[in-house]
Each structure stands twice: as C-alpha cells, then as structure tokens.
Image (tube, one colour):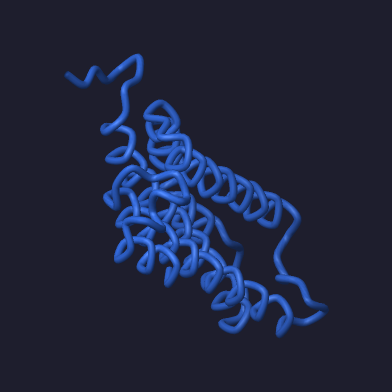
Amino acid sequence: MRLTFTAFQNPNLARAVGLDDGFPLIGYRAIAKNLELTADNAEDIAEIVIEADEHSLNVDSGTMRRIREFTDQVDDITERAVEAAVERDFDTTIEVRETFADIEDREQEILEDLPEMDNDRLLQVREVLVSLQQTAQYAVRNAEIATNLSLNEESDRIAIS
C-alpha cells in the first residue's frame, strides 16, 4: 500500500510502472487493503484450526466437504477479482459478482445444517465460516473496483470517444 501511495504522489514513478496517470492507484490501494484483510482472515482460520483438537474442525465429513467447497469458491472469486482489476476485464467482474450471488448465503446454510455440537466446536466452525464470508465480500469489493477500472478502457462492451 505504501508503494501505491508513493507512486500516486510521484507521477514519474507511476509512469515508470506503466501507468499513464495516478487514477488506477487509488483502486489498487483499496484492492491491496482488501487483500491484507483477506490475509488476516486466513490467519484467523489457521489459528482456529491449530487450536482445535487434532488440528481439525471436529465436524462430520459432509459438513467438512461443504466448508472446503465454500473455501474453494471464495479462493476462486478472490483470485478472479484481482485478475479482473489487473487485466481491466469487465466480463470477469460480472462472473465474480454472479458467483458471489450464488454463495452469498452459504455461511448461513452450513450453520443451519450443523448437527448438535458443543458450544466450543460450534464457535470454531462459525468463526471459520464468518471469515470465509468476509473474504468473499472483500472479493466482491475488489470486483467493484475492477469494474470501475475496466470502464476506463476500450473493450467489446465499452467505447470511449
């Protein structure tokens, strides 16, 4: 984030990294912050698992499969949102938002389907799911930034005159 701020203050540096103006740096700084928050969530999840008995969430295999699928989907939209920003790809931003709409309620669905368990285990699962949901929301924010960046580029959908 410091580098983007420095490049914003120094137009010569911005041009040296291939930017004609400093406008995209504002978006890149926000994306960097969202990625930092994503990393914080990943650290939180890792700490929960390390502190858990046998370093694993103690849930049935079906629930664990659903949590892994949710994790994979969140990872996917996180990666694609950043790719959309770098490539200024409007179509990818749409795909990210559509995928998020599909998984937006996944945290609640998994929680509602949990079998009875003690409070400590329930809190562990809930904290993991909340962190995943927050990460998905950061990905959507990044996709929104990517949308704005892509609107400043000529494409099949955008004509700048």
